[in-house]
Amino acid sequence: MEWAMPDGSTFHTQEVIDDHGDFSYTSVTAIIDGKPFAGHLATPAQNLELDDLLSALSEVSDENIYPLCPESFRKVPDDKNQVHYLKSPSFEWIDAQPGRHFVADRFLSEATLYELLAEQPHPNIAIYHGCVVDEGRIKKLCLSRYERNMLEAIQERRVSDSVAERWILQIVSAVRHLHNLGYAHNDINEMNVCVDSSGNAILIDFDSAELLGDPVLKGQLQEEARQLLSDERNDWVAIGELDRKLREDYTSWRYNDNKDVEVKM
Image (tube, rainbow, N blue to C red; front, side, top):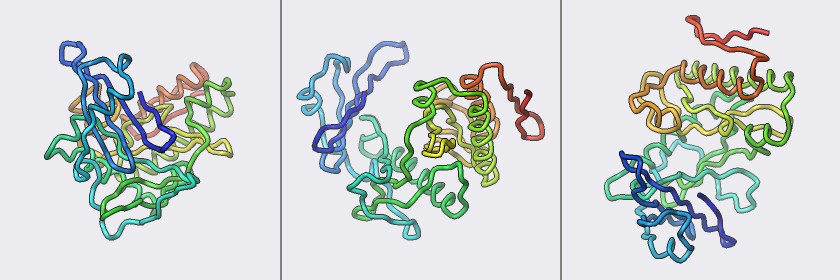
């Protein structure tokens, strides 16, 4: 569960399940006055009050969450007017333990890919403007803001066959561009595709993207297979599933040996 307070503070709770499928603890994280906090409680999230959350929190070292910013990276001021979308790193209590840098490493990896995409953009990939940097560390990624994600779009109204076809073809084009740069997205789903003001599909959220052949360290696919490698097939399978949700039997997609996607009308 995630929510924001009027003062701009954000809170996130996540129930953690042990290897036997039983409740273990509730992870609590927050950003308060721009500083990260984390804690954990032995109570299920639905039974917690705000005072419980606040009492569990301890400040987290920046090095756990925020990576050092390379000198060459684009830098932008903090967008107080929220014209753009400012992405902060997501983390859990376990990520905030001393000596752990997984979140910072992943955030730097995503920023690195966005820097590459800024040099070689694609019309159906999120526009990156730069990093918000404080004391030498990347605190946020500044991206163009889009009206809604694809899940929200299809919940609002049924998508016509022509719109579904256009969205899928746009996602395929974006993914081919990413593959040509040597990466796979590895986490394509209806929440990681947005729809812009012109009704075009925009691929977002690259925190699971990896160079082809490297292990996938984050994302839905990683939860299903801990040994999953970054591969073009991950994206084609995900696009096929997304297409099924959009249009069911209207179009069938398949991955073939030529690393292509076929449309059967």
